[in-house]
Length: 80
Image 1: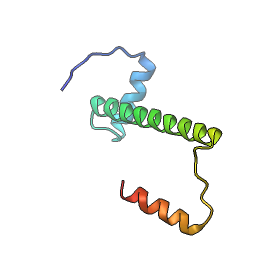
Image 2: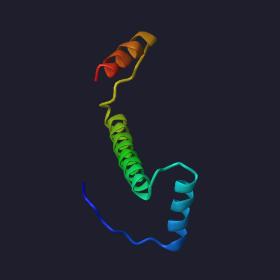
Image 3: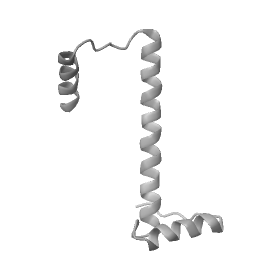
């Protein structure tokens, strides 16, 4: 495991401590790990949205025309 030190402004440090005291996180390390995971997930979703917009613009996206097609697409996604 990688160990690092960071500097925080007092207001941010205090806000983090409130979350820990309220039981949202067991420790500051847990808060930072969860925050990084959420940031990376949000970044990934942003990239996926960008790709979908590009696909719509270029015509590469497929239009689902019926509930049967929707079910087939969902079945494929469940198996990914």
